[in-house]
Structures are given as C-alpha cells and as structure tokens.
Length: 79
Image 1 (tube, rainbow, N blue to C red):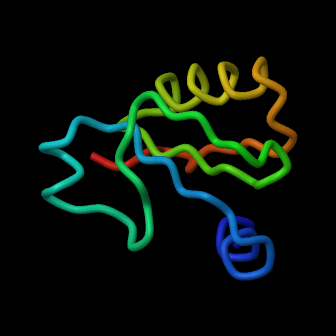
Image 2 (cartoon, rainbow, N blue to C red):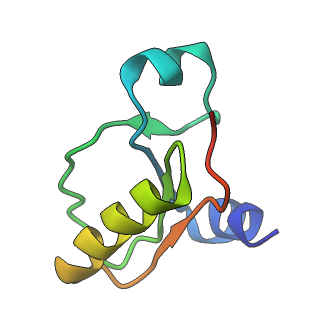
C-alpha cells in the first residue's frame, strides 16, 4: 500500500536494479532499469526493486549516503 501511495501521491521513482535480462522478462510499469544512477532531486522518493532484499538494501544505503531523503525497497523483490 505504501508503494502505491508513493507512486500516486509523491511521484516516486522506481529504480529496478535487476539484470537487464530479468527486467525484460517482466517489470513494474514506469520502473527504470539501471544499476548506477544519479537522481538529481534528492527529495524525490525512490523505491528500489531488486531480485532480493539484500541487493535492494545495499542500493538503498548507497543512495542514503548520497543524501537522498526518502529511499525504500520493494520487500521480497522480484524474480
């Protein structure tokens, strides 16, 4: 529910960090498939999509260290 709220109300950015092949098999509409990205607007909510929570948490920590205010993960990931 929180992901839907962030997408609809806060224009969250969906960052899918899975391998390109996995992304092409299936992904969330409007997600962007990039492993390394600079997001200019540090106040924009970012939701990390990965194959598992560990990968997502690692990327979330990296973005938080770059002063992003709102970073979350899609719990459970997508395989």
